[in-house]
Length: 175
Image 1: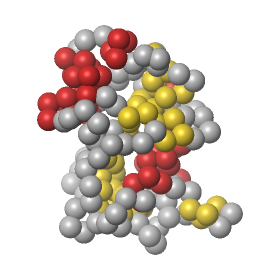
Image 2 (image 1 turned 90 degrees about the vertical axis):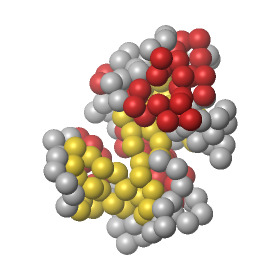
Image 3 (image 1 turned 90 degrees about the horizontal axis):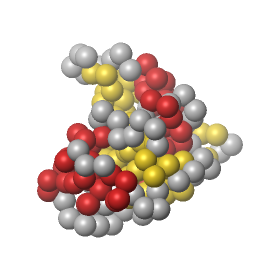
């Protein structure tokens, strides 16, 4: 599946290339693979390597490797999903922003774009995010977007968004 570029008000989600994923996982400076973009302060962050490893090690160019979160030409984070829906119609998403880009609404906008795209994919019934119990900011972000928390194996909280949990603003779904 070739991922589209997704554009919001403050951020854009730009598909990750195979070359960039391999550079990040190898610890190489990603600058040569970002043109015309540039790495924002703090990106790649600690979780970026884990997020891009499946594409770097097993992916194909144009494959589903997730997105870069871009603001004003700078990469400030990354997000994606773990492939298509499972037998129950669930997809698992993940996301992360570099520390200097946090607490500005960028994560909420990026995850909203990701959710809107995922919900349009065939067979998707619900979106799941597993969040560390101590990650209050991420849990608040997901609650704002209509996710509900379900018990999981500590220290993780499973956040789920399905057809009956999505909030409406002015008659439209947020994501």
